[in-house]
Amino acid sequence: MIKPIIAMIGAGILAAGCTSSGNVERNAAGGAVLGGLAGAAIGAVSGDVGVGTGAAVGAAVGGTVGAVKGCREDGGCGASSPNRRQYYDERAGRYYYYDSGTGRYYWENGTPR
Image (cartoon, rainbow, N blue to C red):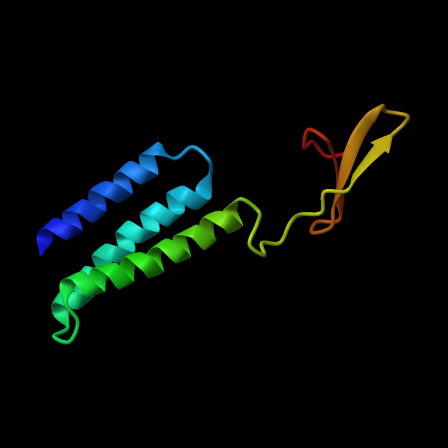
């Protein structure tokens, strides 16, 4: 009963440490580990669901939520993308951006224009 939980935690830590491609994998692995632990705890407390079933369901839900969170951090999955329209100032010879949220203009390096 405790061996699957330990194996799941170890696999999640290894997966989180070995990824180098972005937030999706790290957050999915972390979400699966936390979801599995929460599911196992809920399965142990409730008499209807076993620890293994609770851990499996919790890991699936936690992994899915973590992957979506990571995808949104990377700018995908319906995350609102900032207005990145770039303009060129011929007099200054530099590019600048307009931030529609603040109504301000910024140079390419982020300093106010």
